[in-house]
Length: 365
Ligand code: GDP
Image 1 (tube, protein in one colour):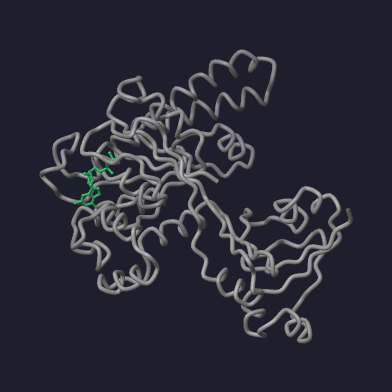
Image 2 (spheres, protein in one colour):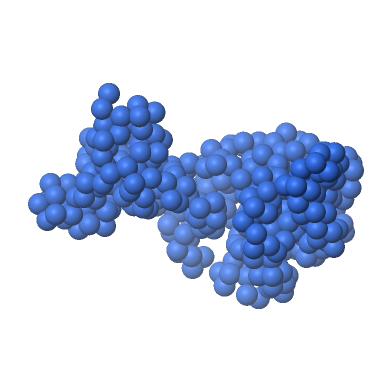
């Protein structure tokens, strides 16, 4: 699963990316400083892993991961190939969801490409570029589908949908806000891989002072929240600079630092978790003396396919899954105790795996 961090230059993308990955991508007060997309693999924070690891005295504890891509700065005109525009847009096309960083902090030393702090204008600038790029894709599809439409009813129907979609985009609206109840149309809409159809989280990058009360005193943040509500997107208030400092600390120091700021967890932890649920993902767990591990699956995945995440042989030879819910397991203190209480279930091929299922797969080789 891949998330792309986007936003105008100098809004704090690289700073956020650095703190997410500690990968050391360049962060400088200069537009275009992030030319190549930087990719970072980020563990998904999950308190259950340590508890399970202790319970099983595992040698190793392995977290689930998601991938973040720091995508080079977009400027006005990108869809027409200005700046690094086209490269930027094709990088976004490959991600599953977007983290859109908007600048809500004032700092006269750090130039804003459009001269002032105005996150709504910034959001619109970027969204427009994404919309232009989507329109181009739709136009190409219309040209292709029209050729066959005369002899093919379903193609004719698609052309009609594409034209409606194009009109919608031309009004400056996002593809994900296109309204249709028709199952076939929804399927087609999904298949186009449009940029403005992807789920978005807005990360409102604020100054340190605005962090403690979640940006309530920052007028710009409030505007972003109102805007996002209409679009059906979530907003996270972060301070990228603080996150970068926190990322340098060890666990104990981090806890103290966060307490001083009046926070329970870092903004990044919240953001990573939110991205996970935004993508419709969940974790099941495997545990043993060698390794305790969280595995990522899409909601609705059945037991054999979940087994296939571990090894294709597990899926092919799937017999059944022995499953105990994490909370039950921890409350009982051991797998055997949970089994005695009848809390370990045996599930078959049709079982839909739930978040926090601790699973032992039985399979034929
Ligand atoms: P990018 O071009 O969007 O990747 O922006 P950068 O991450 O390189 O940040 C641009 C500048 O803004 C750098 O000098 C950062 O140190 C600074 N910066 C980033 N986030 C914050 C923040 O939350 N507060 C303040 N005051 N400065 C920040």
